[in-house]
Structure formats: structure tokens, C-alpha cells
Image (cartoon, rainbow over all chains, first blue to last red; front, side):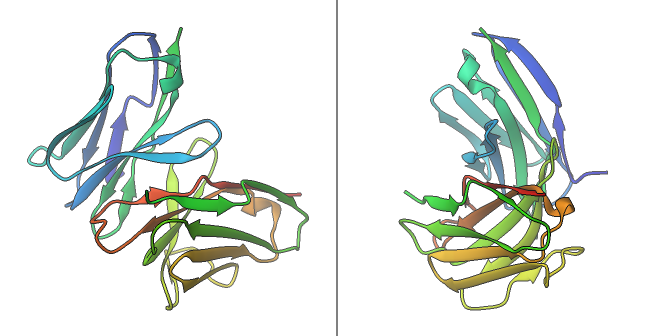
Length: 106
Length: 116
């Protein structure tokens, strides 16, 4: 069993839809990252969370420490949001989810 | 701020040759660098962690003699794939952290290595 589980694995949405990607973890962590990987491979760190909620533009990330669960939300999705989103937990080592491949159709 | 520049972005090499990948922190001093490998449609796999001026710590199963990591300065870390074989073909990416960054990390843009 992976220490970090993401769902869904693949997601296709129409432009404008509200999107939620979930991440559950089973280890103790000090922080959790949401990463975005574009088709070319480059990775951008979207959020680092240790509690509560963060918002950046159309992206919102939440974390519930007690439930060991985090969500990434995208409001008013756009084709340029198409990417792989990876949840990464920072404990005594890095724990990566397997990623959610998002495709937003115009 | 906190930008890591990774070069080259892609490289094709012949079997048996060595390839060096560089990660350079442009506007901060990277006390710790992490090197990852990613196979197609899989997530990142941490290969090793390096701290400036000391030997890298390799994850289980990663051959330290094959993947040489040097972190000789606070702004530069290199990964050298020695005697490359086709099975070394992969996407390699670095990330860096610095004192005061908490648990935050910044990533390089990655290097796609193809060994023919």
C-alpha cells in the first residue's frame, strides 16, 4: 500500500467545470505539497500546506490533519490547467502520490 | 524568487558514455538538493539527497557508483550518469531547499535522458 494515495488517476472535464483532486496519506507529515507537472515534464510547486487552506488565483488547497486528507480544487477550469497534479507528503522522507492526469476540454 | 535552473533539458547519448546534468540555484543558496527519477506515467522517485560539502545520501536500490552526485557549492549540484545504458533512459529532475524555506521546495525543469 502506498503511503500517499491520490484520486482520481485520470480526470477529463469541460472548460469551466469545478475540479477536485483528492490526496490521502497514512504517515505523519510536517507538510504537504501540491505539484503541477506539464506535458514537457517541468514541475511547479503550487502549494505547501501544513494546516488549513490556501488559495492562489483559481486554485484552492485544503488539508485536514486529523483525517490525513488534502484536496486540490480548481475553479472555472481552463484547457491550460491540463497537466498531471501530484500530491507530495513531507515526513521523515518524501512520499509522492502517483499523480492525477487532468485534461480540460474546450 | 527561489529558481532552480536545470540543464540540459534533454540529451541523447550512446551506451557506455557518461552524461552530466546540472542544477543551479539562481537566486538563493541551496543547502540541500534532491535528485529524482521519473519513469513514464509514474510518479517521482527520490534517488538521493545531497547537502553542500558532504557526500550524498542515496535511497535504497540506487547505485551510488552509477549515479554520481556532487554538491560542491551552495548554488550547484550535478548528477552524472556513468556508463549509461538504455535502461537509464528516464526523466531526471532536481529540487532544492534552503534554510528558512521551511518544508518548501523548488524544482528544476527536468532532463529527459535517452540512451541509444
